Length: 383
Image (cartoon, rainbow, N blue to C red; front, side):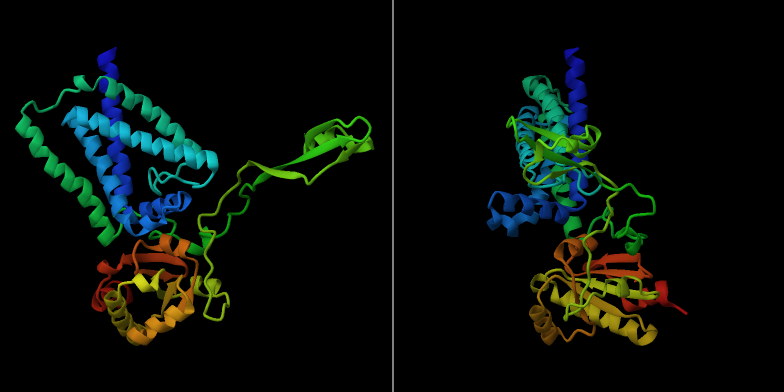
């Protein structure tokens, strides 16, 4: 039984850590945004500039520890590393759940969104299996008995573990789990489908008896069922409290609003444009790659001249910053403005590019992957 428990725990923990690490390494920039939320909670915003590097480190560490556990490399050190990581993650998920400060821990990225309590429960279960491994760490036998063979595997594991995160940070996620992925219809994802369930709320009343001084709490349904209003001695005190008891359908895109410099809403006009259009997303202009913006500008200017394909740029920066950037780069597309949160979800790059047609995402690119004008013409605009 003991051998089975050790073997089962080893396989489960190893595979789960590799899976969790790879999912987050697929989108380290998204994971870094989640880390910045935690930095905000713990007043550690001084580390915001290092969030992406820390995200890659944590993703890589999960992959390396998971693989090393399965291979039996340096088992005792790996057991200590796993125990330390699970303590760290369990504390964060409990803090998020109990104090309701971070609504999603990002344990499995955007691929498998979990609530804080679900994440905490998952970590508690995982903690039990890791504790088994830690207690019996001396019995974790390696797949390769020679010490030289074990040592030679460390390098490749580190290259794979950390290299995956650095690659996707530089070129964008391999798999896109975001609501703005290729093929999605953005306007449709901004509204609930007909007949979708709505949020259900329960109203809680606090009542006090004017004669006896007794108090009691009743829901709105109980209040009506018991016909309490017929007894004039019971008086509602304070304001009724509304409590969500059943979550209804939640739209995938709920915070996107596009405005021009004057503040006029252009969301519908832009998203429902019937033909091809490019949307350049540069949520933070001061840190956007200027060379990439100049190249995008030249490519899109050529396409605009040949095929009348419009291009706009979306940013969360100020109007003053947009004017200053335009003065320096002489961009040929107009600036529009939106909140940083949806812009960061559109494309994991600064800048990134979306090709839309009638609100559908035809394609999207990290600026390092943006094709040439000739390639775009051949693929999308040839007559």
